[in-house]
Image 1 (tube, helix red, strand yellow):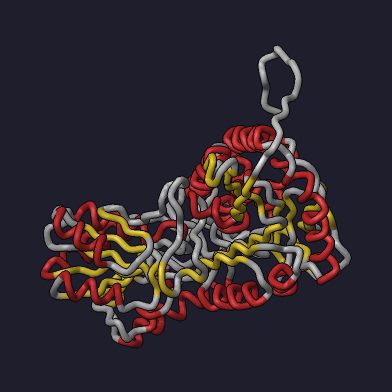
Image 2: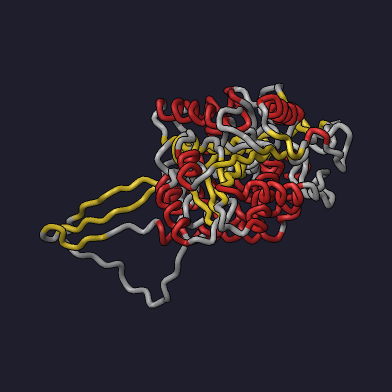
Length: 497
């Protein structure tokens, strides 16, 4: 008997009225472990209605009370990370250490949001005109929608909802139907932290749920992370309905390795960034650009390290887990087939992996291609799997042109000991997030996350000050008072409430 993962409304499970479900599997065994509810329009409107009803009271709740709840949420999350990590591994497949790392990076945003009173401060001008003062405030938008992907079922939602909630908005989270339980666990944690009914809600479902979030006038903004074609759809549909939209799309992330680089450091980084989480990261390095005559040595060092990686069940001591579904595993394997057919050199073939896990698990081991050219599908497409391509170029300028001509601009890196080359690269590269001897340049929570070009649709990046601006809107107030007033005597020490 499998369990049904339902919606979450007003701090309790909500089964909804739809009988449609989708299977949830353990990628390491292939076994169906649950069924997730798929909302119909009526269910989606019920969840949105709860967020709408809760908004006025939460908007008017003091910053002191809001941040106190956020602090409690952070403390509960810190104490119970292993529970959430186990859920992520069971439904996504990534190894436990990677799941714990995901949670910690999401927790950084919760910690950042605890300091939101400072970021919500407005400005004040006395006597802008004679006896006329002007001040500004930032106010919440209302109910907001978050549509998150399968690869980070905890971290990506936490890029958005701590800031949204701290700013006074209510939230409807639509998690991936592939790994939906983490969202319910987080909802239960919010309840335990004391968040009022209706402030954080979970809407399970597929395109029906997504489309209702995109078009329902009660939802004031949409935050989305996923593939570029869907990001384009989300952005076009949401903005046409008058919403603010930040839609983070796909990537094809390059790392340039210059001849003066520490090749051992670079090889370690390529393996970690290319094969971590089975390559199911929008910030994964999928293209290593070897400049000059270092390519043979670099490929040898990457191969030496990659052959030591163990692939298996994420609950064991394996280094890399399975892919999320059988269909996705087969899709990634088809790219390996295509790369081989196109003439790239298969240095390491993950199709033949002997995994430490169930025979029906969704296995594909680390795969390394050499002599890849820009016309091959393994170069042009975001594969979203453990496939690393080595492209050989003669110069820095050729490497830079390769990156800048790519339609994506999410993340990139350069490996060098030349400070001048690194400074030139960070200035000239047309990519939103840059690492210098850092392979996965995901910024800290007090900066903002987001790419350029086809990797982002919308003007605002996630978390940091841009995230605060996204979830609030500014208001300027001009004031003239003709008569003074006072509130009487009270000798007690003033308190926040």
